Image 1 (cartoon, helix red, strand yellow):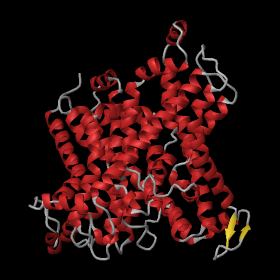
Image 2 (cartoon, helix red, strand yellow; image 1 turned 45 degrees about the vertical axis):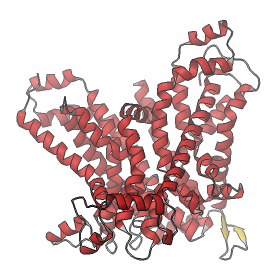
Image 3 (tube, chains in turn cyan, yellow; image 1 turned 30 degrees about the horizontal axis):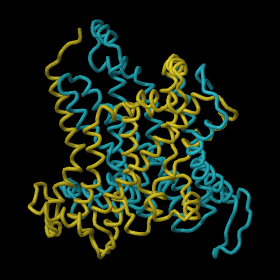
Image 4 (cartoon, each protein chain N blue to C red; image 1 turned 90 degrees about the horizontal axis):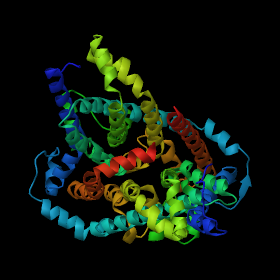
Length: 294
Length: 282
């Protein structure tokens, strides 16, 4: 790793400068993470009297546990649903806004602020709108003969949390897509237009392929968001229910650790989640390096 | 020349106006709901036009709270959120500036090792290692305190990386010139690096303030004393706190107040926000 050619010479000053960050990192990141690794190999009995070392038994149990396998499935559906929904809506908005000249900034302002809304609040907002007894959408859906009740219908509960999570993420995707669209060379589009390609064809054969690096980047970011930052959406609304239908992995770690007090299993789940984050981060960084080097 | 299609533009505007309406809708409904008396919600659906109780509702949540459900007045929660968000933001910025300075402008043993330790934090979000982190904070006696709310969230690899990247783009001559003029590390940091980084600091400030304000799981775990409740987690207590239907008009007034500060930050500092967002993530 490079430094400046000319640097300061000092025996202890650099360590002093690094100390605050490194100390906090060790106490609140590395130590807890290693604790999770260690605890994932232990099992406590029901009363917490005895702790035995069980090797990878906690992990083995997880993968034959129906609840955990279900949670994996739920997380997958949730992450894919949120990513697809928010990215496609954001791309549509970005393409439309990119056409505008005078009104571009005004539309952008209207579309970026949901980023500031906390996931928990986004959840409560949509929960209110979809509230089976007083909500406005169930009332409207009722006219089409659809009976909305996310308290008993698992699929509807899933749809609710996907909408809430995707809504908040639209602004983020929108900003990146817009930036990407603005960097598409205008000459390419003009050349295609001269060759007789229509709007739709120009978009799918020129603009969209040029956006693919950004699309890929956003996919990773959105999956990370859906998997790890949406705890609030779930906790403030469905609390994992009904019948485990929205019990995503992050929520399950919390539930098993703090409500169920099953520390060994919760730690094993933490370790699995950490592995997923590491893989996703590495993918993301690979991508950034490629983009910088071209 | 690209054709200028009049109908295409009208279609685009229609889609966008519809889209904006869709994005604004949940918040509109919340604002409307917060202006109605409680009786409105017993009658069926949510109204779509404002009612006349706005002042009453906001006064109630701000200064009285729901004493029966054990939640303090919102004004206190807003203050707690503000203190936590500011502490996280300022803390993150200061320790990241210092460590980026050390990594770029000094050569010392184990430099790479420290860099990797900081890098690891990027891979370990709180949600993932929640139980052991809680245990550490509990062992240190930091439950129910602002220190416990903010310090564990302060370490940030992203800010350190961003400042490192930025410092690398500062010309070598800056340091040479100040060394010739006899400036030591502190003077160089204070009089050259800080003023040059001010835009980056401001952009990160916006992003991190929003991050800090919107913390949910962490305050939920480590505060049992209502005097330390932050507003974003307080809402959850209000929604699920009672055994009957939540008092929607008060919940929505709280929701509006909780979302307002970060939304205002984005609206007034949009340029900095976009800069911060695109640069921290790219």
